[in-house]
Image (cartoon, rainbow, N blue to C red; front, side):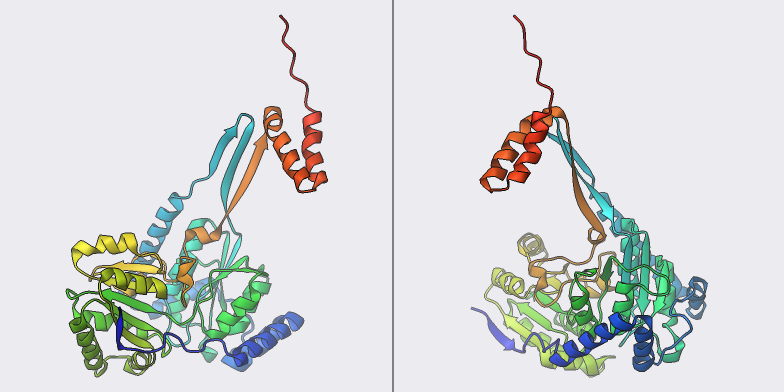
Length: 431
């Protein structure tokens, strides 16, 4: 039976009544007053009131001149990794057409949505990689228009590196807007842009609540809480590397869960000690340390299968597996609930977050039990179709009519039998 070497609650309260009330009031006002209300909130909350919220593409590209050549090269490299993996995913999604009965042809097509709203968060840190994940991937899917949106830096507009990342990722339009007002602008349309069909991208509690309330009017990717990391490790793992990976993800915010499931009590205690030592010089110790204190846990499992079961019960957003090499495939085959999986000591969450190729928009707060993360398929509607000949109607209409009548839907039955009755009768054979 498992036991805790360090125990902390996984989550803090995320969406308070105050958040819900504030978001409801803001969205209600924006629905009534439109762009005037969006402008009011941008001015009030972000100190941002430009003539237009649209960022000229040439201006966004020119922002790259403020970056050094090496960073621009790294951005291009990461973008190519994300694009390449998305293209490989798209290649697996084939249209289908099959004759299921003589005269009955069924099929499906993968049809891209037309307009995507991509929210790129930039509150605590300027998030470059979020553009790669939420702009490049829908463009690979074949989306006509991606409207990227990021919060302004007061009177300075969007952070230059973020503007450059959005433009070079292929955004068709860029809006300097943040928070709830950005969600509403994407959902309703602004500056001559059409409403988004789906809004994707992470944000703070207000952004998440706005997405929840707008869902149905528009599609959304998922409802994201604070970012999470869990690690499954055995005695072969390096405690300093494990500790560093926990803190690396914890720096996102003081409410970020960071959990170690280990089969080795010695390793668990060594990780706890290593975290303390690393925090003495960790560059974001104030944030990462707060997350570790409030939401960091170390759980001792009896064996690897129990560690896997504990991890599946948590369903973490990011899951690293640092166990003996000959047990990695067992973990890959057995684990069921995670947003993205990082196998072996050389695979770290930061790789997935910033540009190895997989997407970093992932389910949190247990949602990995029923959904995966953002991927090229999220921007495709798989739509079915059917085509029937006279022979197809002869074969299928009697069954449809009988089932419809059994359900007391006689009108349904008639639509089948009327077609059947109008078919030419097969020529009788003569002896």
